Length: 422
Ligand code: ASP
Ligand code: MG
Image 1 (cartoon, helix red, strand yellow):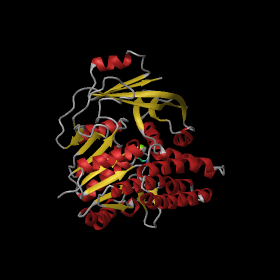
Image 2 (cartoon, rainbow, N blue to C red):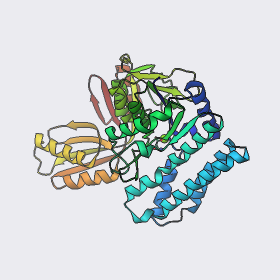
Image 3 (cartoon, rainbow, N blue to C red):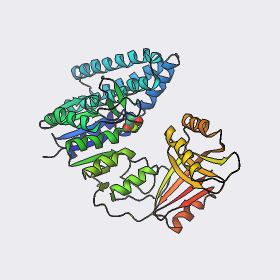
Image 4 (spheres, rainbow, N blue to C red):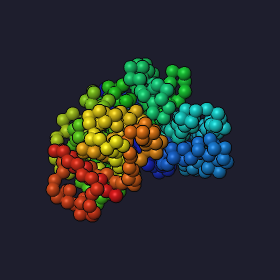
């Protein structure tokens, strides 16, 4: 029997009811063995960890913030384990983890900031996975709690750990496969480990990627991401009304959606699944009986417009200081400066005397690009912009978006229209 992978994000396990609901889904839609459950930190815990870290690094008092995070986790535990003796075990498990978190915060100022980030922020997933695991065990399922850092091996690029596929795969086959024969494995999303035993993280919202990796290593039958939306929609329902569900998508279509900024699936998720043709289901944890979206090898080509909105964009306009026309070398130089800093270009337009680039408003990276280009180019920045990408655009879909206000930059290819707004 092939394994399956379920992923529960922070919103799905944000309180005791959420954890109970996740457990019901695991019981009703999963298997009693051969199932890997990947879980994110509860609710907004990762943001809280980042705030704690900032305070600790700045030598500010973080005790009340830490106390609030403690109360949050303990109050969920109290609701989940009304029985005193069960609660006692969980209480001491939580206590241990909070002690470890506090130790990490105390040392925060002493080491590299990004390294410290990973050692602190990972604790959110250690807390949530422990609570979910304990609850599943408590309701009688055969469970194992696996430390993702022992499986997902990465290099030491803190905050953006690069996964070593071969090593991680070997670890998964050696340590996870045997457990799956007799039970369900719970593990943390978002976390990796280095050869020297340090924790890394895989980038914000990286738990989807973890789920895809486990599926890849285990040669899984499928991955299911349980979300607060019915599946992949043709726009973010928080932004647009009357969205429609995309029932089937090819890997290609899904990858493009994430590339342009759809946040429903993490961009790194698709590739490992496509390599092994493992289907990805995106389903609602609120209506788990609904089929949701299947992303897979034979998804039909989706040919209706889909809308992706990215806020907080910057338009950088460059022209050469000596008023010369921009040649191929200039374009190469500019692109190089951007790729060196890791800035991702959303849009690029070249004219005789200027290059326009739309990118995320990442201050530090922009400053570095600016430093290297400033001697030869004059740069203009336009901030607080919104980029709307329409996949499979139609005249009506463009008019619909442009009906609100005029775009300041427009670019069209056969498969996408990109419209930039102030
Ligand atoms: N907890 C992490 C975050 O909020 C990872 C995830 O949710 O996927 O970024
Ligand atoms: Mg999350």
